[in-house]
Image (cartoon, rainbow, N blue to C red; front, side, top):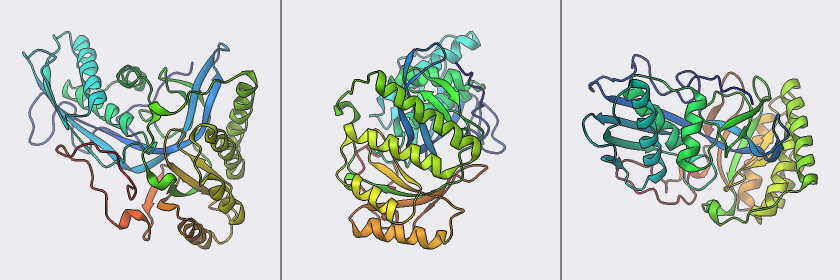
Length: 365
């Protein structure tokens, strides 16, 4: 197993802003903490792989994206029972479990009795589209609780608490390095390299952006031939990262996306792949448990701006809603909403502390 070495206070999704020391913030006293976590744009690769001991593990490689995020604030109430925990909005049950687990963890480290407190969660990540909204909530909460105790938990600890809170999690507690992550165990199976090859992603949403109920998806049994196929894709992705080969990464993402359709069955998937082929995209990627998808473009290709425009027009003319265009270019992913996309037509309001966490239909990003 590869150790989790990234620090949540540095890089993407850091829990503190400049000048905000642990355990306090301007206008707040001791016992207050804040945390933040970003989202992702589905997966580049997802399947079943072999760990270092040769054991089968469900694993995934996410496509990082900055922009939408979850934010959490936690105020400890020493002397109150740990079950006396107020959570706003009240439907964030996974986040509430994460807060209780994080309080237990941090209190044990401080050799103090666990206590109750007040938790407030805000954010603008659409729910049910496969962008890691629940994991982002959970990680932001764990960071906020740790901050209220004046500490920062290692990514491996955050991953362990996240899996306990929601049974599976995305690797949003790590930095932007591409990793093969065992989402049901909270551990890194392999660090694939320093960074993804440069890509421009024309993001969209399939199925009219309707949220996907992951619990209702059929559970597919994988045999040895499936595992061998996923291991071949893993090796190709490792090579694509090592050589900064956008085209090879596109082949891997497309193959993984096509396998994912055996469960998701998006009716527009063939249209998406046809647009990619006609307009010179290197491939497509999807959320394997949601509706977001993307056309992958090589930023070094000739006429990139025209290609992006043509992709947007082709998607729009086929009734596939464009969400945003973003890039994986180093040092960190950058994101830009497309001016003509659904994000500029209203219809989605960020989740505030008094906003029910309702399923978000497009326009959602």
